[in-house]
Length: 434
Ligand code: SDX
Image 1 (tube, rainbow, N blue to C red):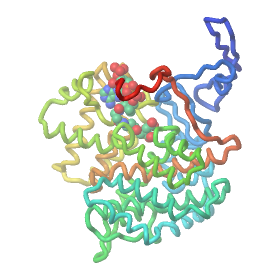
Image 2: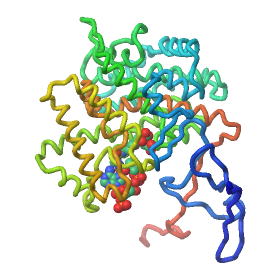
Image 3: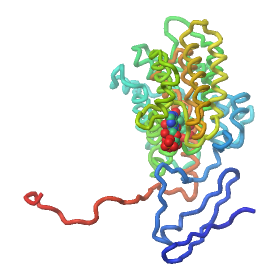
Image 4: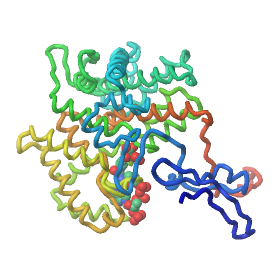
């Protein structure tokens, strides 16, 4: 039996209002509160959106209770095993897996757009060499809006697809050049002969003087990690892209706002914070329990980074896959590799935490960020580039969700209201009376 309506009763006046219940394909039904204010003069109150569906979407489905993640209905485990990042990009944006011809055309469309305007290189020189690469990524991705604005009609489906192709094609180039700028190395131009993830590693680590061939295990690992990071329903950065895009702002500017949001350690910045935490634990020589106790101490701001999730109250399915990739990538390293010690520490920390009632009772499990950094380190990707990797992978999610929103008939600007708790109306106080 599916609930069709919910009745709200004002206990003061006995007044009743019947609200429609909107049924999903999967997941919780939603109460349609759109008429609430007009009919009752009441707002709903939900800071952090703990119980609020901000939109309807066909793109990604998550079940936090059982740890399910699906892109357009396909389980993430199957995409990680059988798909490629570019095939997943096609799926997320267009809604169906491509035929061989469609995929070949899509890969060609991306490859031919992987260069950026030469003038874009000048933006890097404005940043200090030690500037955080996410600051550069945010600035340079936003700068794309200066190159693609006048001739773009966001209400035209083809123009929206071109914006997606440009972003998917250019973000790896922009991301790799953040690293090159920091290292004072020449910018490596993309190579059409290389696959997407191989090309990124080439632009990161290639040098003009000698041929560079990426480690095939690293190429495969990176491609799967990017599939796992591609989209995640209405997370903070995606919600930012939707909200900024809802004003009909330039999509490159909206994606830049998504980069800014992802940077926070409570969100995509956690992958960098996890490694700093693991390194602190190793350097301290303290028993793991010391850090578990600190994470539980309400008077201590310390949290187990890479643990917990707003939606997942089970093991993040992406973390499970990434943990397996850790073993594959690190297997090549010598036994005394510091990266192996880091992985060992992470796995022990997970074991101790998951046997502690504080974490079990709050359903706090490792999330996507807990193990990803260990792999990036093993691939010689520096700590401050981890969230840039996340942003590069999530770009397709952001622009697919933006496309879905702008393409909707009833698309309108997002404008939340508030519970005002400030001063009641009062008269201006003259200076001599203050
Ligand atoms: C990502 O939304 C997405 O989908 C995000 C993401 C994506 O793909 O887009 O999955 C990517 O951002 C993953 C999350 C990365 N962040 C971290 O790993 C940072 C550490 N985790 C936390 O800060 C926290 O778990 C959040 C931010 C992820 C979730 O926070 P919530 O949902 O607001 O939960 P909460 O802060 O209300 O915590 C509930 C309880 C609290 O204790 P009580 O008040 O009930 O006593 O759990 C505790 C929290 O103190 N808690 C933690 C903890 N996370 C939550 N305690 C110790 N260590 C932690 N990591």
